[in-house]
Image 1: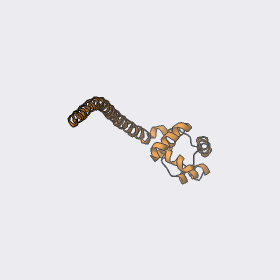
Image 2: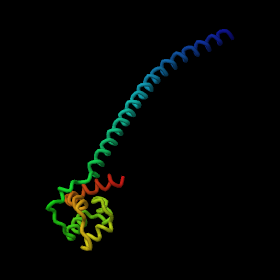
Image 3: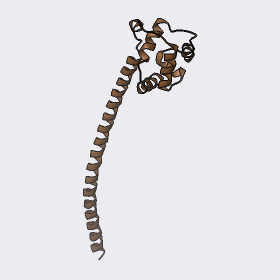
Image 4: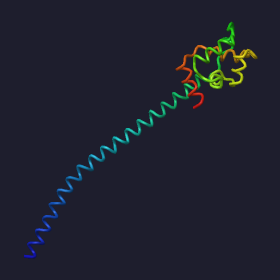
Length: 145
């Protein structure tokens, strides 16, 4: 009797092992597929991150590039126009100064008529005065970031 019980136990163990092995084999295959998929997604994210970083550097270089002095030739300066453009953009004098490449106090003095921009500053101001609100905010993000 003990022998039959032992044989029965051994047979049940073998059958359950076989069933478990087939079930776990499927899970291992699926797990491997998921790991490969995750690895591919990580590679894509890394690639896209590099591309975004490259494009941000290019954009920052484009924005920070100083305009030529020829741009300022024939340009007229008006303190009222500086104030109205800054108000239209809805930004502080300090932020407007970051766009132009000067300090906020310089912008304040320009608006008050206490000083006028030099030729280089005038060229930078001329390059900024045509900006809309979205483009100005985008440039501020890049300059500050």
